[in-house]
Length: 239
Image 1 (cartoon, rainbow, N blue to C red):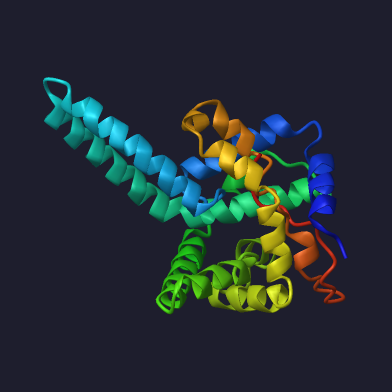
Image 2: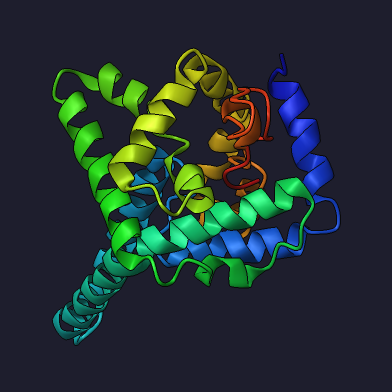
C-alpha cells in the first residue's frame, strides 16, 4: 500500500517536463471556478485582498463609484464561475488523469467537457449541498464527507454516462477505508499550506501551490475491469 511519500514521488515523475503546462492549467481552472486549492486558504486570501481593496478604493475621490464597478465585476465573474465551474472542474480532472497516465495533457483539456455544463453544475451543487447539510451536525462530519466525495469529478470525467448522484455514491464507495489515507496525503503538504498563507501568496506564492493538491486519483479509485482499489495514481491540484 502506497504512503504519502510514494504519491509525491509519482507526482514529481508525472510533472517532469510539464510544470509550465500544469501551472498554467491550474491557474486557468481556478479562475474559471474549478476547486483546486483548499477552501480555508482561499477564504483567508480572498478576505485579506478584499479588505485591502476596500480601503484603497475609499481613499480615492471616486471611491464609491469604483467600488460599485468592482462589485458588479465580481458579481459577473461569480455568475460565470457558477455556470462553467463544474464543467471546468471535470475538464481539470481529465487533464490530471492524462498527466498521470502519461498521455498528452494540455490546457485545452479544461474545455473537453464544455458540453456538460449541466452535469458539472449538478456535481458542484450536490457536493456543496450534501457537505453543508452534514456540516450542520458539526464541522467534523462535513470534513469527512468532503473526503468521501473527493473522487466525484474523476469518476464523472471517465464515466460520462453517470449522473452526479451516481458518481457521488461511487466516490463514497471508493473512499470507504481510504479517507484517512487521503487526509494524510493532504496533511503532508501542511508546510506548503503555511507558506502559501503568507501575504506574498498573491504574487509568487501561487507558484508554490502547483505541487500541492496534485494528490492523485489512482490508488483511491477502482478499475472498471477488476474493481481494484490500487489502480490509478491520485492527482488533484497545486505546488
